[in-house]
Image (cartoon, rainbow, N blue to C red; front, top):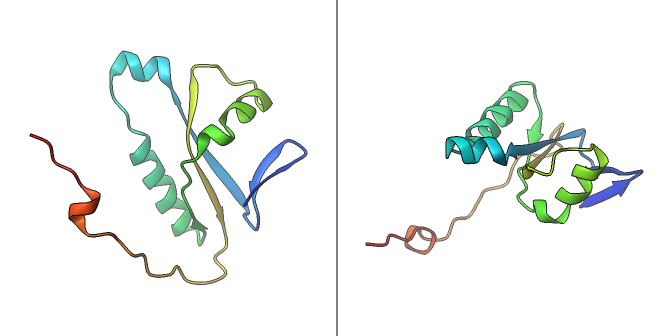
Length: 107
């Protein structure tokens, strides 16, 4: 659950959080996006240090307020949030829909 505490955005029981932004002016000039790879590398680095993490992609809910709080450029767009902390239980099994329901191919 996301809480606002004294203008700090945290998830309950998290030790911290990583916010992923992209500088949209740079992205437009390069026409590429590499945020997913960065998120994977940070997740692996946190895991190597004994942390667990989750990746949230609901940034429209908090992006505007976070940019105000830290006086970030309007061209910065919050892509993801990665709260992390010491695991209290192992991760559960993840269920997936059948592949033909998750991937669409168009000709």
